[in-house]
Length: 319
Length: 299
Image (cartoon, rainbow over all chains, first blue to last red; front, side, top):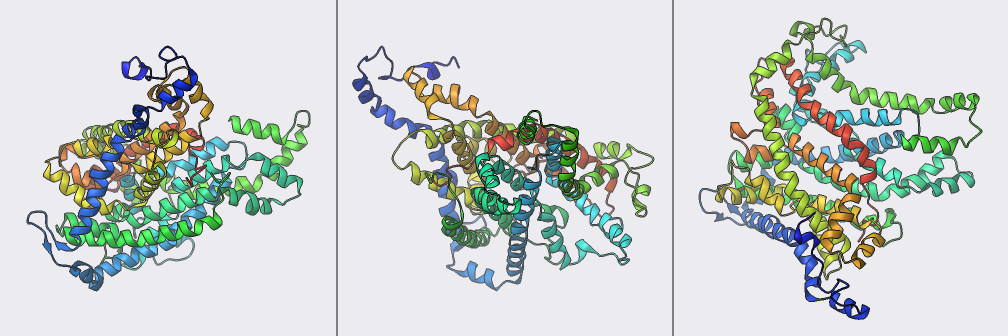
């Protein structure tokens, strides 16, 4: 706070420097003043150029090469892409990931919305409920992986015990069944998580006047939900949709920790495939091609979302 | 709490608060209570199970029926065994170092960039913000490999530099975006008044914008710390050395040593690793609902 940099008055702005108002304005828009935003943005610019733009171009180039870091890259044209399309494991990981995205993203969105609506009902003990609702999200990924390994375990697991109590005596081998295992991960991903918090924040921003007006007009609560709450939440819905989509396409920590992608690639998701190609087999070209395929798929979805968003997202004041 | 109080005042204007109404209100909210209870039960069940099993002996865990919710007798063996298996304090220290090394420079550079985007006018600002949003939506995997090769060429792998240097360069488009959203919602009158008093932009940022942005900044602290606690990819690539491993990697090795899975110590350590995050989220949650705003997301 006492730094001279912070307290030094802007030249041309101090009243002592020039008393005349028009003059002050004229000098305020001096060259230095105009350059100031770019000075503020300098770290951002450098970051975008060095750690975003260059890596993007580099990865695009290397997706057309054989490259193992130790030897110079060798140009092979579209061979990486062709190979990937032909390989079973790519298709499997891609299908697993698409399935995960298609089921868990909308599922998580709906669950998050319902949870947020529920935690927005003004009942006694609301703060306690909100705090409790956040507890599951605070278990670190590695801890959660350990717990869920235990819960889904065929012999000791809680799930099979509960199923047995409900009258299904034959326990499922959840995590060792190549078909079942991906559904376990998809199922576990259907939760509100941070999306719930974002919806909850959005609910605080719905003006009370709208609810009052709806009440005066005699709207039922379900009508209020669909005509007031949900439309007002649409910017938050779009944000949640975008971020959870991008996250879901890249998800691989929990399966990698719990099953390592197995059995038989049953829980191999796209992210782990990229990671293993790059850092286990040092097929950097392969990995680059894989990530570009992911990039293109997710960008198509994002652009479609943005294109349609004008028709369903409400912006207050437009801006 | 204030929220509840205002709501109550709104529902029960002064003088109309009677016992009968209170009873009817509880009945009216019975459905809400039931639903909240059901949702919390499902959500908290795994966490509860983790705590419960951390205090059980292996023999107790083997008894699957009837379900033993509260362990009886309670044992602390698992914590002792789990603690001895690894140098947890070292991994904790590494995790905290990662959090601080990423948090402090990221915050500084992102606040500057967000301030420029939110409160300064310059040619191309809209376009650059669009670029920022696109970068936010780009999968990390695209840049992961070239970045790693860059860092390896510079000999940074196995040091803290891969955490520090990109962080100094505002390499967190999501944070830039979210901070910018918050900054632009702060009324202009305050900063204009300060400007007429002769304050420059850095003073306005430091004395007006940052103090008013405490909720969103606190939220970013929580998010980055949670990232350091959870991330798998960054430590796997850059902090692989035993002396630099974070808690996630330590836990990963712990899970990986399966075959004769030591469920008890695993649950116990999961509990211990979770506790600081639970405390942090308790502290952070009250900031969230005020901190997050998307108004004017369009431009």
